[in-house]
Amino acid sequence: MADAKDPSNAAIADLLDELGDLYELDGAVVHRVLAYRNGAKAVREAPRAVAAMVRAGTVTELPGIGATLEEKLQALLTTGSIPALEKLRGKLPAGLLQITRLPGLGPKRARKLHDALGVDGPVALRDAIAAHRVRELPGFGAKSEERLLAALDAAGDDLAGPERHRLDRALQVGEALVAALREVPGVDRVELAGSARRRADTVKDLDVIATAEDPAALLAAFRSSDLIADVERGGEAGAHGTTQTGIGVDLRVVAPDQFGNLLQHFTGSKAHNVAIREAAVKRGLHVSEYGILDDATGESERFAREEDVYARLGLPWIPPELREDRGELRLTEVPRLVEPGDLRGDLHMHTTASDGTASVREMALAARDRGLEYVAITDHSASHGFGNAVSADRLRELIAEVRAVDDELDGITVLAGSEVNIGTDGALDYPDELLVELDWVVASVHTAFTSDPTRRIVAACEHPLVDVIGHPTGRKLGQRTGYELDLDRVVEAARGSGTFLEINGSPARRDLHDVHARAARDAGVLLCIDSDAHRTETLENTLWGVMTARRAWLTAQDVANTRPWPELRALRKGGR
Ligand code: DGT
Ligand code: CA
Ligand code: CA
Ligand code: ZN
Image (cartoon, rainbow, N blue to C red; front, side):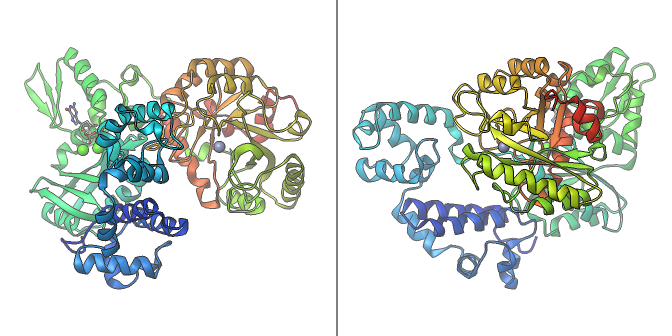
């Protein structure tokens, strides 16, 4: 922690976001608004103290932070506030910002409500709706009132935003912290426990379990780590802090001979632990975080190794990803879960042809460097609406480009594909004569989420040239829950037609979700783990997909793209 009084990165990012929102409400030009949003994102994602960078004069090294933002941050650190922010806060009420985040409103319309009706927040908005005053404004109607009321109800206390953190962001700082603590002299073992170790989609806080000959040195290192913004409490046995990125950390220092018990306990999940205790009682054993008490002897046993905790209970060591009380205690032998190294291909990625940032050749080379045997280039079709629109003619050119790169490069097979939008009628963007030219077709819903997505996805499964459904539920962690989908019908359509379902590895998606992916596998559907990379760096997204697949109990056999391409090619239903 650089200086006890410095604001954390998360706090700075919130201020920049607020500035962006207030400027937008104030009607500022769009690039100004974006500058603050980009700056907020850069600060939020920076693992080390941004306040310290401002003091050192190096903050403009962060992408998206220029001289203007640097000046605002300097003011914040020297005076404790940003003058422009104070001015805007005086002009625009805080409640107005909250309601701009309601779906269907946004800054322009929120501003109209404010200026015409004096609406300054959620309470005033409810009153205005009840009095039917909103519908009188141009651009609003009775339907808007209904929708806004529903949005207010759905938002509840949560208008301010989500409190959980995406796993990738939690692991970025969690793993760096664990690595740093392991380096401290006098420290023996440090492990991440909790939901982060179970590779859940999101985590509330990080749990770190450690043993040390010199606990004081460990705690001192934790307090002074520049990954940690602030330590709220602490004693000899542990501490509770917050990372620069705004994630809580529970650090517990334990005796070496109990490390296994505590690691097991704090890895959870709670449901898994409850099930373990209930099963143990039947064997005359009482499990707690401190040890296992045997009724027969009255003796409590402690274990340094987690494997020995499970062995004492007559269980195989259960991989953390399975510890959700979903039947894992009935395993006599743990299946060999899929691993990153099992993936031979990646069948969903974008290039500059649509909304990616790298060329076909660059993506192929980067994939080869990562050890992949094959990739499919799957740019968006025309109706996707973002990036360059790939018309049918453009797709023909792109296929030729892919074939040329494939001929040129050794050591990687480059396949021509597309991520085709599923229209509201369930139809695809390209004619069948063109789709049949492709090696791989991903079909996804990107538009009109409320317009019967189940029927559309079922129709896509039944299309003979569709190989896989991309990000089947459309969820975005912390942003939207996904379309209202009848997953049983989708799984049944996929099984009946021989269509694969994707586990999209983007850490914001991880879609299918683990529970659904497991149901799909149990029904006999093969899953594809894809990166959906839009740049060469995010080819590593398949790692998050593998984590989801492991939580879904999948083996390499259950994942289509662990096979060599000739074998997978023969499994496609298309028969082309
Ligand atoms: P989260 O919400 O993402 O932080 O999820 P966890 O699983 O990391 O939950 P957390 O941090 O509240 O607690 C860490 C672990 O400690 C949890 O997975 C199991 C264990 N634990 C916590 N509270 C209880 C409890 O009341 N009973 C039992 N049996 N275990 C608990
Ligand atoms: Ca936790
Ligand atoms: Ca915790
Ligand atoms: Zn997509």
